[in-house]
Image (cartoon, rainbow, N blue to C red; front, side):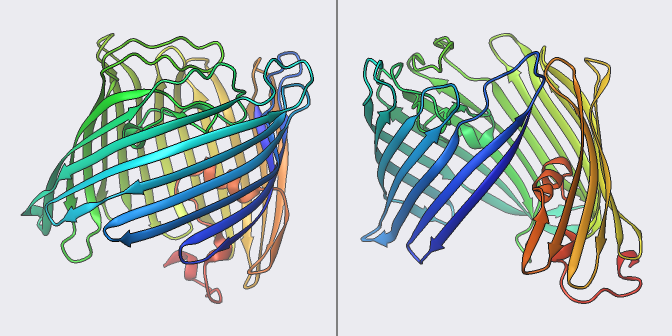
Amino acid sequence: RLVLPQDAFLRYTQRNWSALVRVEENQTLQDPTQPVAKPYERVPQLSLTGWTPRIAGFDAGLMMDATRFSHPTLVTGSRFIVNPSLAYPVRAPGYFLVPRVQWLGTWYELDGARLTDPRPSRTLPIASVDGGLVFEREANWFGSASVQTLEPRLFYAYVPHREQSSLPVFDTAEADFNFTQLFRENRYSGFDRVSEANQLTAALVGRVLDPATGAERLRGAIGQRFYFSSQQVTLPGGTASTGSESDLLFELRGLIARGWVADLYLQHSTLENRMVRAAAALRWQPRPGSVMALAYRYKLDEIEQVDFAAQWPIAERWYGVGRANFSIRDSQWVELLAGFEYRDDCWAVRLVGQSFVTIGEARTTSLLFQLQLNGVASIGTGLLDQLRRSIPGYQPIDLQQGPIGRYEDYE
């Protein structure tokens, strides 16, 4: 399945607050013999966010959101959210401690006379404490002076249980399990489900830094979450979890040489005592607009793929872009993408062909075109977003400032 978003928004930002008006529609490309539900559309979304940092040592925030959700076949309606928060951060060179409390109120106005409860609601208090230590020392990194750090971190979150099976699911899914998610109170993305929590995350991070610039040369991290109560809140069709600990996560990222970046991610199931997810990537980016990336992805019983992607100058003012994704598990090409970009002093044009496999192994082929007028507007599809998703490290050629020299792309 491929979702083509059609998104229009207007954002206004001041020093301590911002407002957003947004309309989001979409077109879903899929195998007609095996259709799946398309995402909800926001028609419209109104959002207001405010914050007041460092008032008597406190950081206060408020988020309010009103969204109208539309769908051709599923339950539709409006959702209203109010989410105030208050934190008291304490930070020093060798440690930090951030206690935080929130209150989340969510109200719905659902369409349909036959609904048992057309106006369901949910209110929740949320509390968390995030703390850690930072140890550092001078070190040597392949002959260069460096700073090495060791950073243990603990994060505790508490959210009481609320029955939520009567609430619709407009924009909520189980969040991807990664290091960022380890330090969040809710295991779901969106606001239609909030998981109960009585849990502690423990992590250890180590870094190698450039002492002059603070740039990160190497970062390694290991972490795990521990549950002190069962996880009863689920999405429709889901099952409650009674495990006492999450999978163990390991992450390693480093600048191994000039222009070379390596990434490694491992997720090990302590319950099953086996690797359930892994990813490794190597990227070479010697200069802006020039990148090659090779990656391997594995997810137990679901995915095993290799991926090659590139953006590279092929002639004066001309760049080639491409991606090839191969499924080892299915012995087929999942996605092929190839095209070119042409850059002038004040405009750029892109033409890309794409072929990918949808659900049911049906292949879809498309041709994407975009004309970019630098600093003005663009004509065509959301091709830039597609290239950013497909090619790690991709940089729009129209964002490079100044006139083009004859040999600029080959310095």
